[in-house]
Length: 230
Image (cartoon, rainbow, N blue to C red; front, side, top):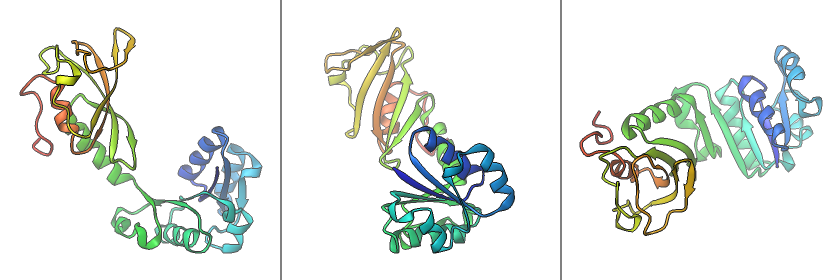
């Protein structure tokens, strides 16, 4: 996959490093001398393209015409919006990801500017805090389909409603699936007749709306507050 990264600051450089390690074809565009000095010591030379990423000639030299993803990681929100817009409208890049530097500008990072994914650190942190507070001991391992679904894990304590119940008898939320159970260090393939035991580590896929209901099944009654109630 060809990924063009605009901006070689800490975010862009770290992203490039990770993608290079995963054998992706990375092109990083940067023009600031002090940043270029640093990234030339951190990344392969062939990855780095010197120039202003907002200039079409520089983007074309870096191969934006062939890119599958543009990651706009410059420290300027206006530049990131312009890059996303040009990448889609002029070069038909299938996927655009843009960094939000100032949370007050987050409302601009939408389909109007062809931003597919906006990376707003403040919003991500607030969402994680809300989720951790509402789900108690349930841990989110992975977000799926742009955050609509999550892979979660929870260890079943004594007194949980699910203890002793078979999966087929558990009133699971409509959009929840038990993916695996780890019991005494071994994976148990979940089947309808599988019964939960104290100490089981349950891996499940669930949507945002059903997360609270699923979490309630794996904790003792009365120990969890409803989402948003403290």
